Length: 154
Image 1 (cartoon, rainbow, N blue to C red):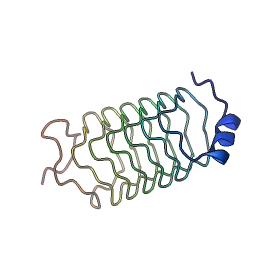
Image 2 (spheres, rainbow, N blue to C red):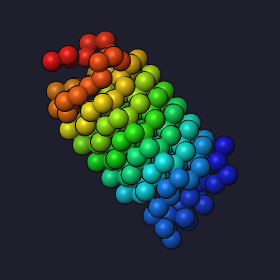
Image 3 (cartoon, rainbow, N blue to C red):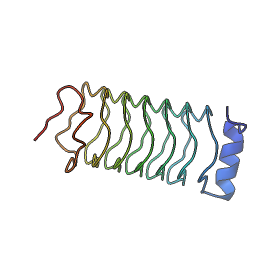
């Protein structure tokens, strides 16, 4: 569990927008405004980020394993090489986010907005894509294994 409260994290953000490498395991950041924040390589394992504003945030290399990002706005966020395995992204806005080399194994993307998302070299094994429109995604080099049921192999 994180030793930081939501209020302490907000206070940190008022003095410095970089939280790179911070340990926020299990933190409750529900509906927090983290827009544009540097969370590169942060440990957000099991964090509650539902409804959070993460527009343009840098989550590259972050551990978001089992994080709750339902309803979160991650538009334009950098998530390259992040671990989103088992994460809940139900109704999340991922439009124009960079998910290249990301692990989404077992994640829930039910009704997520993935328009303009970069899906280059990601693991989609066991991903729930029900209600997701994949027509506007960049999928130039998907992995040869790990396709979810119904993934277009064109």
